[in-house]
Length: 273
Picture: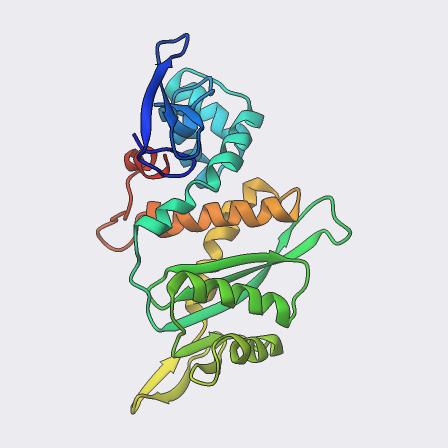
């Protein structure tokens, strides 16, 4: 049994709880845990929690999740419980990205859009998304400023996740992208400014037409998901939940003509334990 805290295999059985669930003790970090792992101390079983996470990843509100669980699972947790589940397990879902590698391309697209963040001086914020030509979301970031520093942060996250610098970076006319790209990627990355209309460039002795339509297309998915959510309460929760959507989009959402997924929902408990 692997320890959910330090991932050590130096674990031994350590009695049972009142419900008869096996408990374990880790000799590495000296912590105790049960065979339920991160699903311990929850009133509802892991299957119900995963169903709630799946429903929330669709364009549906937390109250809509409770209605659907009552209709199909004959239970009705509160919408607050659903939100707390998403906040808790969103950080664990990041482990999926460490176990399943994607086929990243060397042409990246970056774009930003308005989103709503409540309980702040400025109710509007900017959602930054870096994607590649294979329609993978490389990184995301939410900030109140539309400047070079915010662009630099989201590009650094994309570089850290992929492990390399792109050959071409496509963006709109924001001047901050040019400075951020030069700072993060260096001179070997070519920065191309393009909007909806394709721009012809010569790359590797080949004529290419590049536009930023793919970035605009990918931005429609979080926009559709954010519509019933009606914005975020805080900036830190906005970044956490956008990362939750990114993991869902890359690994759990059907892609392509064959509608394949890289990770099935049934495999999640074994990955995030």
